[in-house]
Image (cartoon, rainbow, N blue to C red; front, side):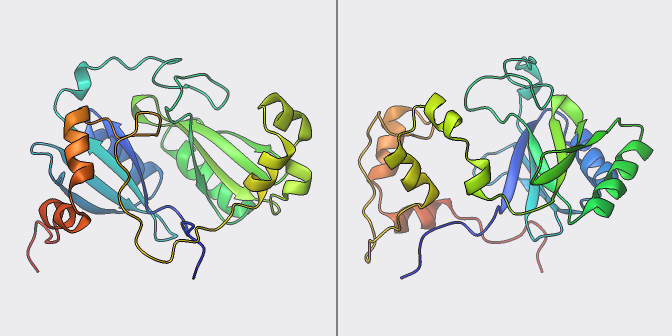
Length: 228
């Protein structure tokens, strides 16, 4: 039985009020080719785009009606810089990966050639980074690994203490135990103390009560918008 752990990121999705602006930035400034743009599955009127990154992962953009009417405020919805504050649960910044110093400088040159300032490189011991902004207040970074992030050197006991993490808790974080289930695990019933998707509570309870096979059958969209 294999340990359950994701093997990477499939896609990172950001919300946008201007799909064209985001696609222009991420194709031209970042060099990600556009590979998908279609009506968001199950969300009539929504737009969903996928841009390909070099490691087989994707950067995704979602545009929904009315997004332009929702205030975006640095310090609340956006951090504004890599050291800035924003509301809990909100993405603070996104860092993309390059293989080495030459790749980092090449990306800095690419970004600057489009008139976008890119600050750095700045060393962080196990990585080195540049920092810049994207459309609609995105805080972005490009980094490469200088060395392995060794927890023996990079997990600070003082920080564990400040976070209220005990020695025993730290051990389970350093060595996450495997899931030992050898059969499908039933869907848990709704429990407000657990993280939950933000559907109306009664709708969520109905979703959780439905068999997995029914959710798969009703919610799947397997055909591309342009037929083969």
